[in-house]
Each structure stands twice: as C-alpha cells, then as structure tokens.
Length: 236
Image 1 (tube, rainbow, N blue to C red):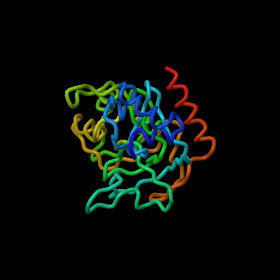
Image 2: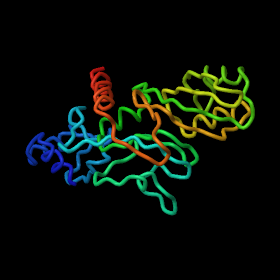
Image 3: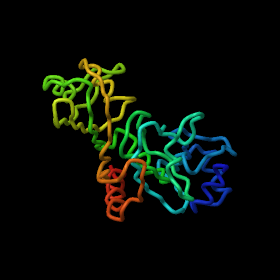
Image 4: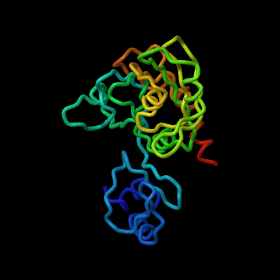
C-alpha cells in the first residue's frame, strides 16, 4: 500500500495532507524518515510514525500464544523448512514476536499489532523472557554465577540475568535481552553445551500446560495486562 493511502485509511488525514506530511519529513517508516511520495509499506509488518507517534489502521488485533515444537523455523517464509505459521489455522495474518531458533521449543507470541510487536521485541523495554535450560554435562554453581553477572559476547557483554538451579544439568534463566542464540552461546562460554532449551514465559504471559504444537488466543486478562504495560512504557 502507498504510504499516503495508509495514512488516509488510518483516519489520520486526507491523502493530500498525507503527501504534505511526507514531503515535509514528518513521516518515518521503521525508524527512517521517508520523503518520497508513493513509497510502498506493508501495514502488517512496517512501523509507521508521524512526528514520532505510531500510526495504526483500525483492524482486529490478534494475539496468539504458540508452544513451538523443535524443528520449526520462527519465520513467515523459509524455503525447504517447516515454519511456525504452518501450525496455525486462522484467517488473520499474524507474525512472530522475536525468535526461537529451530532447535528450541516453548512459548512464542504472534500478533498483527505492530506497536506490541515492537514493544516486546526491543530490549530497551526490559521485558523478561524466562527459559528452562538443559545442559550436556552437570553445570557448576560458578558457571551459573558467571552467566548471572554477564559474559563477553559479540563485541559487548550480556546484561545481568536471574538464574535458578533445577537439577545438576537443568536451570531456569530470566533475560531482558535476546541476542542471537544467546543462551546457547553463554553456556558454551562456560565450557558446556545446551541440549534442551524451552521458553516458558514472556512478560506476563506464561506457557502453562499448553501442549507442544498447540496454540491459543490470549485471555482477556493477559491482553489487558500486556496492553497496560505497553501504554505505561509509551509514556516514558
């Protein structure tokens, strides 16, 4: 859809006024100022702002929790691989919030709400993500403390984490960031290897007893609490 048409369809302004906003450098797409008329946008995936206010067209907002099985790719399209969208049977177009790698399992949130997608995905919002981890060999208390404090990784350092031991080879870890394959890299840094990784919580949303490969819509309370968190963050 052309950008000026999207602004008009969202009820923000007329199409002609939208063109003026674009020419005057007031419109951003995915954080970048756009001044070229006729720029195409995808309302489902692109984040559109006017004067730093996120604009969304009126539509039914869908929020889904999926228990991702091993072997599925967290993507809307991946040639030759099974994707998480194959597990859904709904008429609405949704897309995954963040990622779980192919060998990981557990809670994955999918939505068509761009603002909520950005709020949960971006590390600056400090959303907790909790995982159950199984290591190849028993993992020492010292190794867990090192991961808690933060480890050098990818030319930076991981943020402090919260860790609770479950058994000699299993522990729970709570992160407020999501670097690529972060937990697997952290465990490798302390001389071990991950053999099982399952996400059990994102912010206020818990996996609970949802069976692997199954999905459900967020409850009204979960949705209300999540949107309340989003509203509070957006006021900062």
